[in-house]
Length: 193
Ligand code: HEM
Image 1 (cartoon, helix red, strand yellow):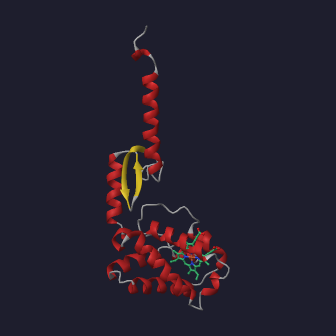
Image 2 (cartoon, protein in one colour; image 1 turned 135 degrees about the horizontal axis):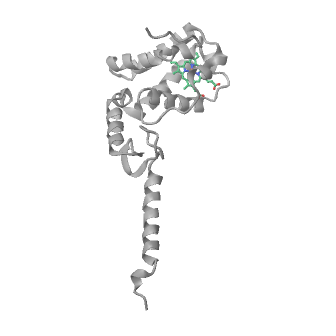
Image 3 (cartoon, helix red, strand yellow; image 1 turned 135 degrees about the vertical axis):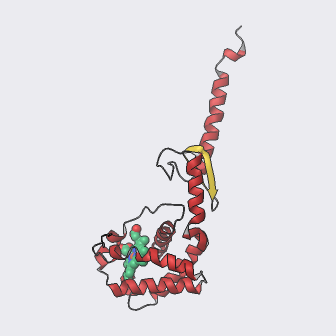
């Protein structure tokens, strides 16, 4: 009789165990591609941020991601909780403003809150990239004026002030908002000198 070790049972068992552990890791991670390089992520190379697991192709990328998160405006203002509170209060102000609220007639505001939270999170350096429409396309049909943009930016600024965000961080958030202005108003981008 052949010794047991020649029977392929061992490799079958180990491959089942391996596939279980790998799929277990993959299920935990929110991404399959490394957010830094775009290459396939190694499911064993992960870190947690705001309770979610992110996977990377290498330890170097994991370190870069962690540093980027730590240094981001998103992190400094208080992460997802702060962005959620900001957008909820911001839209209360926008919808109470007769000069701009008509633009939102017929818009599904539940979806709008969700999309705006995702956009603002990404724009401020949150962990997930924005996958929605680009700002020019999203606003093209609205034919917005400079005064509309300024009203919206004003509501954002007041919201952040009411939520007691530090003035220095408010300035940084407003600079990010201003960087979308040419797209939102469908104007030519000013070329960098
Ligand atoms: C700081 C500048 C702005 C940012 C960052 C911004 C961001 C966004 C985002 C992320 C969306 C969702 C895009 C998608 O569907 O994937 C959106 C849609 C929309 N935005 Fe803005 N927005 C800005 C300015 C404005 C202004 C000035 C107005 C009007 C006064 C406006 C009115 C709308 C409306 C009505 C929609 C919904 C369009 C639709 O569902 O058809 N936005 N915006």
